[in-house]
Image (cartoon, rainbow, N blue to C red; front, top):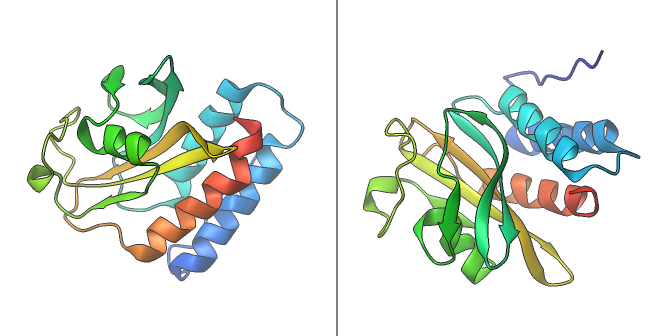
Length: 160
């Protein structure tokens, strides 16, 4: 049995360092990408306070398709360029959205979500997936969160 958790009083950089270490340890040697994404989604849920959704969308045939996640049921397919996830996948750039209701074309899978952080996962310069994290709090995410999830994406890319 695995026990992974973070002290809620840790500074964000340390929390994300521990999250990346826990993810790497948990998925080490496991070749199944779905199992690895599922465990990483569960780790994000455990390590990141104030969130209501954490998971993956995978790039499949030129569109994003729902992958493993923790949270309420979600949209299954997202075209590139649509919503926050589609913008991240199309641009290859992290999307840090303080208020999703002010994001043009936002796709509301969970009406409780107020802010969102989406980080592309790239292999050989191509987006293969995005990590999507939502929060019911306005402006829940900042540059430290973005940097931490970007580091996580680099740490896990070869295992998903």
